[in-house]
Length: 79
Image (cartoon, rainbow, N blue to C red):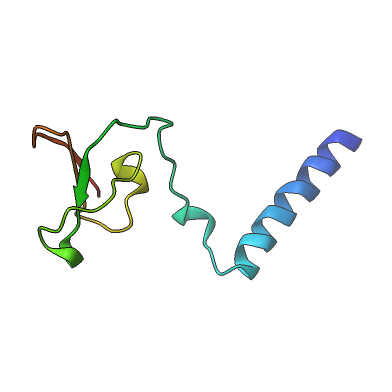
């Protein structure tokens, strides 16, 4: 019984904390713990400029960023 109350308090604190920080609990993004050995990344805001790549597309700074291997083949596109 005490364990149920403490679990409820923890959940309540997490929800309240996310509201105070301006985040909605449904907006959380879960990313795979994969880090590609990519050569470069391009993003819509920078055109064809080669940027330092993120570990994976889930961690890319904006939607539409593409991560490439050194031979120019695309690994992924961020969504």
